[in-house]
Image (tube, rainbow, N blue to C red; front, top):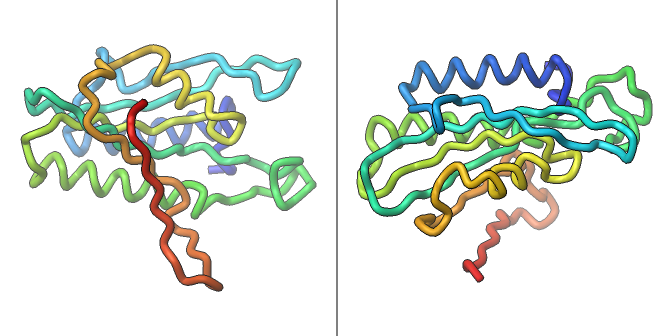
Length: 176
């Protein structure tokens, strides 16, 4: 998908794919739509529009678990990639197609076999590579009541393992 750079037609192609997957999984729309657009500034001159895709599994519970992954990547090379040319696709299987694939599998499991003791917010976020703009938009627009969040799981680069250390890295924190 051309590297899925935020604000490009490749991002829109990825959006169509992910929305179709959520529909097939019978995941509910959040706030009437899966698609939530937001402006972002990839540099000091350009303002562009990117798209978050947000679904919801409403189990009528008191608390919600957010599970997210960014689906954008750096596109066709350039200064943020290992390829300084802007003509070469910079694929992102580990950053972050692996997180997206895992989120789709987890969504299917939660919808069909998961515990009903929590609601689940499924968030595919964009403009991560340009500065976490999709994550900021998600939090700032308060699509769901953030006071009822029990846990947030971010799936990022789960396909990349440090072969020298052979360790899995899991980080955690508490609400302030």
